[in-house]
Length: 121
Image 1: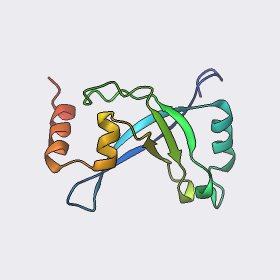
Image 2: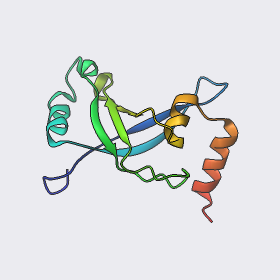
Image 3: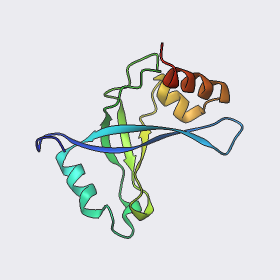
């Protein structure tokens, strides 16, 4: 929470790895409405909180490795059992990150991301 006016949660955007059972994850911040943020806090460590409906939010992390801006993409934050961080689902659009989340990425794409993150130009 920032100055009682902006409300964020952190969670992973999980992307399936093609030809594997693994997933690639981006850790991202998502802004929620004050009401959704309060609702999530109320039930965060409550048994059965994974049954909560997804919380609508706006992606607030710029992932520079995407060919298009990633901020302000529509998201759904899905709760998981045991107080685990919610996973972030992007609205199914033609944005490259949303396409990757639906279709998966290759090991070559993961290497490309790792090189760019670990050895920026």
